[in-house]
Image (cartoon, rainbow, N blue to C red):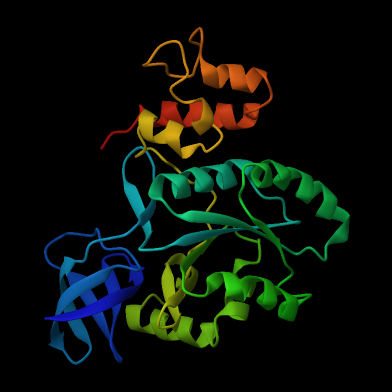
Length: 294
């Protein structure tokens, strides 16, 4: 039996780093609940292949879900970088959902504002990010292409000793950041793609780059939706950090924070302590959670 770290996943095929060798692995049976970042026990079946027998205990698990199924993003990550840009415009809904997912999973979240050299859109973008900064989420301003050295100086200290996953919509410059932060990222990606035989689909799988013994960076494919159907109502209310000071103060102990009289959350919205946009997202997520079919 060998132990390794899953560094890429494509369908039900996994690439596992075991000390100084990489093995192409499958799971026993039809199980597909392995995530990039998982520590796994496996049996080597040939010089470059193996079978995953078990998954080690996870510290964290980040995933998204729709009405029908869950999509694992990464395991054992300690922080999430949500990459946004001055242009093209980013989705507040996607950012907010990613923050809720991070809170629910116990993962620290940061926002990385890229392309700050696009000056005509900078102030407007900063104003949009003020909401998240006011909630206590750090916002780091960078420009991967226009100021690569400054960008490295801002982000590299934040990565040290952490396992960090970068997510973001297409066009935000996430690939440029990865190439800046990860030495030989392009070469590593091509090697991983060849090993997984994923060919032209190189951008559709999540992959882990080990920077040093205690630092790793995980790149994920760009996506436009972040479903959270797996979070229950109770999990959701606790995942909104602006709700927390008001929880337990409603008139009714089983308050749903929707239309109930004496609701402390609704009172906080009326008082300007909770953004109406955030409360609308909460209501939408509770509705989605009730539609889950699995």
